Image (cartoon, rainbow, N blue to C red; front, side, top):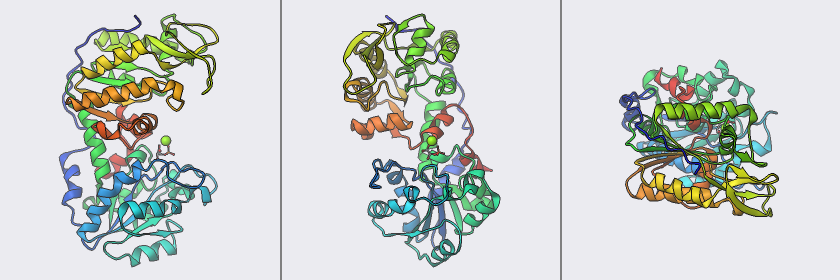
Length: 421
Ligand code: 3PG
Ligand code: MG
């Protein structure tokens, strides 16, 4: 069976909290916002359909406790965010005004809107805000200065509020004007993390530095190249690593398997070999899906069959993990005390290839019910737990995609570092 099991005493690294400390964490709850205007950087980069309906409001709902604490204290709130990657300045498609009705409803308070994030209108509306009121500014990325980290732009934004709260974990890996540069225009006591940021970092630190063993990382998704650094970092911490999704076939090819027309990164075959060797040397068990659901094309109406993952016929491609792999992965997950999940097991957007990802979501939920700590992060795995209704059955669902990945790669995120400085 194509399951590797070099078991496994993972290194017991000392608890080193790289980016946070207790003082940073308690600061928000202890801060009295009464009479203050809090300028909060949130990550409201949410998916919208063609009629501008929000199709996943997880990131908005996550910030409600932060906003409510400030309003309850008797403060007012100025929210700033980006939406998408507009290249041409103000664009209807990327306007944050589309979020106002839903945000008002979710918050239970009418939210005002400024058509620009700096300039006269923003200044006047911010100045006129009364305790208990909320103002949302237009998309920060309508100014190219945002992504450039322009100091003057950051300074103008900073003048809108008395205190800066960074609650945009999803954008913490960007060194932009509103996520990092702006912090220097506030005194140390007036720049702090919000509750989303705190929750994210506490969960991530728990997994990275004080995980109860066995610690299983489930890594999926299409490409090995996106996940090399996270796997390398996890080899230092996890006892078991499950690899699924399209990236698994590069590993099978690295072991001279026949993978038919499955996705493969030929320039990463040596990397896959090296990762397997490192795992062996470190005593970390790597599990690959022994069998796959295969299809004759990448489409909803493909013909499907099943196959061992190392003998996939030509003309066929693996698009989900098979039933033996589901059983094996479920067993490993059930025995775990800490679980990190990033990346789906198959093309779960298509009904025929969703079984593996659903089975993993269920196994993670069951392990959590039995006392394991589970953290799910990364856009696709979060979409999967939402789709299969497991979001409230895992310990923590991250609001970060790229940010979560970089955090688990061991990088320092600029949005976090800026508050600490
Ligand atoms: C995200 O969704 O990944 C964050 O909001 C950051 O957006 P970006 O990748 O466009 O910087
Ligand atoms: Mg991104």
